[in-house]
Image (cartoon, rainbow, N blue to C red; front, side):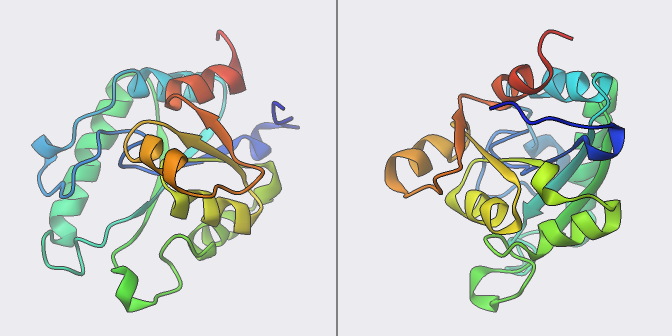
Length: 187
């Protein structure tokens, strides 16, 4: 079922980064390591033209592991932002958790805390928000926060779909472009 949005205030979408917008790689430490998935930049431009505010929510445990610094992460995000803008899209914000699973922090997905923080910052009800991810942790966080969860089969999504017990409210689509096509049509 296609979500109904009342106005621009409700048209917020949250995306995981790796495996949704860009190709999944174990470590993305330099801007050149960041490679967009085919069709993702165009999908982000379509969301922007349709009035969606796009937020990225990403786990980045490589920071805590010492494999990447926050400065390197910022440089990667700058490249991502530059390419999205060049394609006609726009990001409102990027939220990230730098912790490993062993840290037992509250911000790391599958905890809904990062998504709840986004809702507080942007003054939205998460029941009106689509969340797109490629892992079970993404779907569990979206479900727990009350978002409309969409699993894409890019990145780790195909493996997650085959191996994990997804929440019953999880929608499965081939990639971000397919989700956007469903949400905004042919605009």
